[in-house]
Length: 101
Image (cartoon, rainbow, N blue to C red; front, side, top):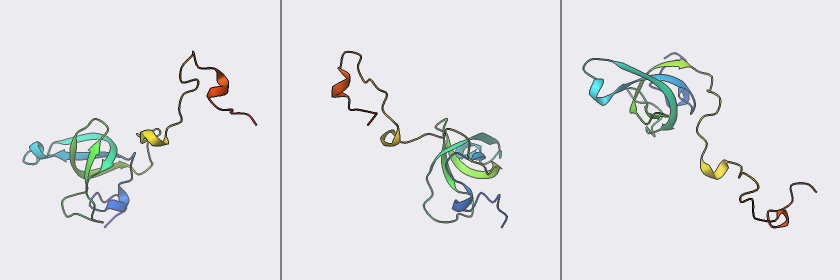
């Protein structure tokens, strides 16, 4: 199996540009291009391709890996995002915490 094999979970990190086949396109083989937002297959490999959700919300199995490099700015869980400060223009800065020590 090559490094571009969409049947192996390790080859499909978040942010990868891929082509998937949607359930409704399995007969026609039509591929949909997008960026991997989440991995839905939990096993290390799957004979029909790793199931993913794209940033567009579409779900399907990876048939081609177009870029093994992670795309810049993949979706980040909210808990990892830095809060925008000030949160509210009416809140005094001393209540927001000090960013300089």
